[in-house]
Length: 324
Image (cartoon, helix red, strand yellow):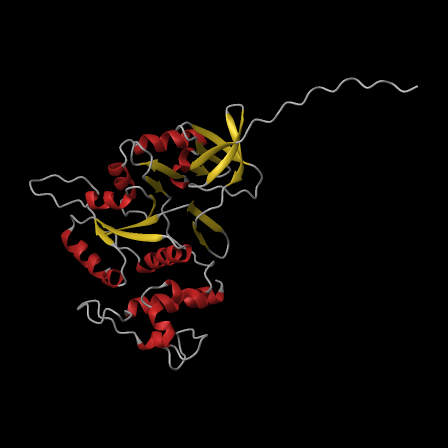
């Protein structure tokens, strides 16, 4: 004689998925902002769901936190990759602001790497040179950027630190603010460039917001490793993303044979090469090698390639070819 089964308990429907924007990320935690502005701590579903700041996501509430279930297709993703690991900065960007300083002296190799990563991701770069109030060092640094202005990159002067005295230098913030309107901009730069000072000038209360997010994520002393999104306007149309400072910028995701295509001063001369698989290092009839000779002091032959830029190319090509 069969025994009757007890009635099963009714299943509770899973909470519905909600739309959100990732505005901070640290380890396996992130902060998701809802369309109305409320922010929720979330955890990505599974290890393979690599959530980054700027991602549009679908998330499910769970008690006072949530779980990111899906990531919407990205327009772009800026990241760096070395021989050991890949580090993502942010997704769905309109531009990248590369912040340099007159002092300490910036690395042209580092600048070139950041620009190449932007070119590879099809993201518009904007260069800003900070500390315009330091007249002599700024003039030297500005001159070093002549090849980049000749390539067509926008280069802005800045004096982000508030100044005293009767005749302060134009700080350049108004010109920069115009280029940030209605755009999502990642700020990238080495330590000492004045990134925190600039963000605090552009975003009143940014330090407080960073502290709140750090506390919420439990990142504590690791605040500097947290990428954070700031709104620049009440309408939430213009955004600034603060990323951790970097000392190295690996480009191992770049094919060395495509490297010249991501360098605007080399790119036009590739078509003049005799061989389609030219490395631009030693082959006869190379259009790139023939175009060297841009004089950064006089600014002559703006269509040529400076010695420093060609050296950067040859060093990067060797690095990417060796995989080191």
